[in-house]
Length: 207
Image (cartoon, rainbow, N blue to C red; front, top):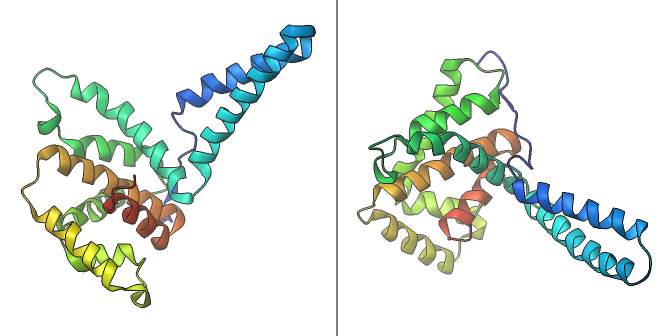
């Protein structure tokens, strides 16, 4: 690659809830300052509630590095894929997720040629072939640290691998492709360890 790819992705991208709850918090705060008496008390309580909800939402999006990519990437993916899925005759299980994901990549991977973006996208999504590989899974569970390998984690890796080796529906394949594509952006922005943390959460069903 001639240039180092730059990821253009705002951590609060597509958070409609934050926009409305933040707006409501601002209104309540203004009315708290403007009113007096019983009305002031009511809007103080509403300001506390909406303020807490605003804080909790922002914290949830920013608390870990992978979360700063995960939610924003899914928001962009939804914005791209929704119109495509509405095309007559296209169902969720037959939807070509690769086209939508590549479109998202093209939008957020900056300072890279078309060929470089194609290569990056193919590299990350191709990891779906290892989704039933026990060593691949164990690597994510231990964050690549062999010293962290325990019988419990080995058993968990085996369980996940067996589950992944079962015949999979297209919807599951699409689900994993979206997450693997997301993990690629996380890797480019925050590094390999953060990518493994994210995939660990995905593989164990915590996200």
